[in-house]
Amino acid sequence: MEDDVKNFISSKINKAPDKTEVQPKKIVSEYSHSDFGEIEVKDMPRVKKLASTYLVNSWTTIPHVTNHDEADITEMEDFRTSLTDMYTGERKKITPLAFIVKALVASLKKFPSFNSSIDDIENGKITMKNYFHVGIAVDTPHGLMVPKIRNADNKSISYISNELKIVSDQCRNLKIDKKEFFGGSMTITSLGGIGGSFFTPIINYPEVAILGVGKAQKKQIFINGKFETRTMLPLSLSYDHRIIDGAEAARFNNDLKENLGKNFAYKLAV
Image 1 (cartoon, rainbow, N blue to C red):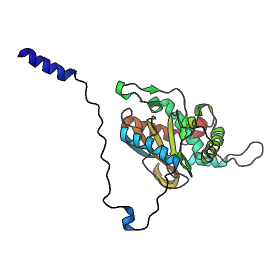
Image 2 (image 1 turned 120 degrees about the vertical axis):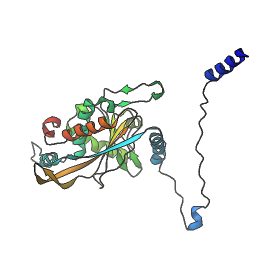
Image 3 (image 1 turned 180 degrees about the vertical axis):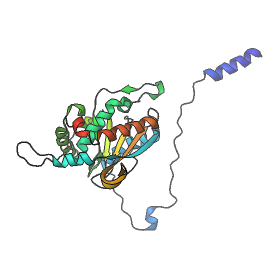
Image 4 (image 1 turned 180 degrees about the horizontal axis):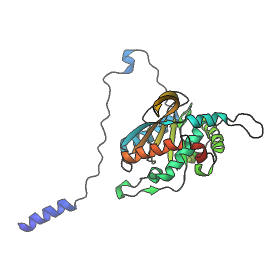
């Protein structure tokens, strides 16, 4: 009898766990849309259809947390809008996004956990990346695409600004290599050209963080006992809570704000 009990317990302990996944039941509407009026059924854009799989995977497998903050970019904007070509004297048009890319790279160097992936979470393995390939979310007629600015740490702001235009045009004209959508460090998604302030961007798997940028606005900020008009940039940092905690995310945002602050020209324009 005692042996039977031992054998029963042993069989329960050593039995492999059932890994059968229970698929969520698909909800079927009781009524058709056409029951309420005229409708038109269209094919979903191919790019959006492909992206939907990755978005659902990111949202359902990564515990997202978003840290919201504002960066004072007054001096950065004054500097950016004053840039001129040393040969022609004409004003140089450099997108603010180029400065943000350089600022982000500087923060990634200081906080390497943001430049990692945890593809092998079951075995507790983290992949730390020694490269700095920054993803840029590009709005196209075909859907959102995220090409990479490769080795952004070795490129000047002017070069990055020019490359942003090139890859954006390649995406819009469907002339970009599929490989350019993979192998990123961290992604920037900007709504600054459209509007809005804070939002909750979805992490671009297998990355562990994404920076959302809103539209910069002039605000009255209380500094040294008086109000001053400053240009403030909304920042929305979503991060994977499995590897990044709230305190580290807040420190990352603080460092990013400092990189975009009044001393940015000496740190980033080199």
